[in-house]
Amino acid sequence: MTLDELRKIDFERLSQDFKDLDPNDPGAWPLAPRIAVFIALLIATVAAAWWFDWQDQSALLEQREAEEVQLRQDWLSKKKLAVNLDAYKLQLEETDRQFGALLKQLPNRAEMDSLLSDINQAGLGRGLQFELFKPGADVVKDFYAEMPIDVRIVGAYADLGAFAEDVAAMPRIVTLNNIALEGQKDGVLKLDAKATTYRYLDEEELARQRQQSKAEQKKKGAK
Image (cartoon, rainbow, N blue to C red; front, side, top):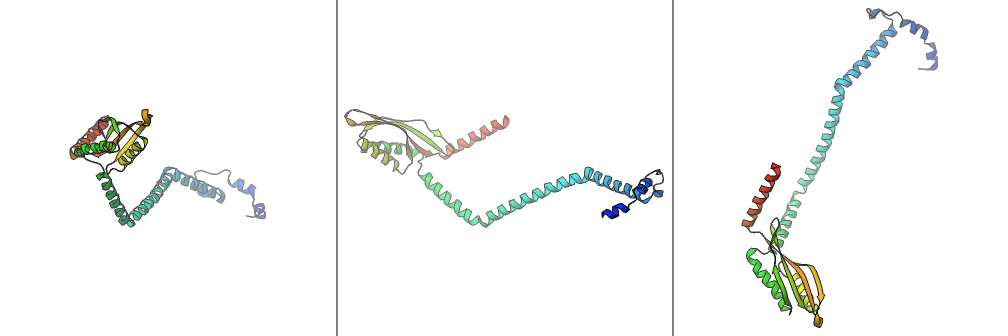
């Protein structure tokens, strides 16, 4: 509406139309009050509908839209997995193969005595003197057990290094930890270390582990 059109509006006449209105006979009102009341009722109706109904529907719509986005993302992720399923199977087979190869490096309980003898012979074969060779108690893990061995060996530096190389080259897994060297007379060294070897648990021990795990879960559930 232009400025000239606004000037043509008779505001005094409009104000007169809103005076002395009979609320019992709105049909006899002038046009301007009827239009104003219609607009007010329309605004009130829309506001009431928004407050009592549309607001919840709008929130529900936003929630459904967010769920749709999440479902699309899940679908795309599953589609990618489905497309790469053969590659994942090959990767899983390779992982199982590598795990099996590593597992073969762990002796069972019956082979531990032979392994301990091999460690002892590796030192004696290098001309080393064992002052201490004391296997400790097994430390049981999920599917394997650790056996710590306290060792104290006396010999030349080169022979001690060769012994460490021999232990590292064993087909079974043996690690040397907490190594401490101390000089002795005649240029020899005393080596204190904790050798740790590993073995896999047999079926009886695995069954015991599973029972213990179930018992611990029951205790946690009871709390």
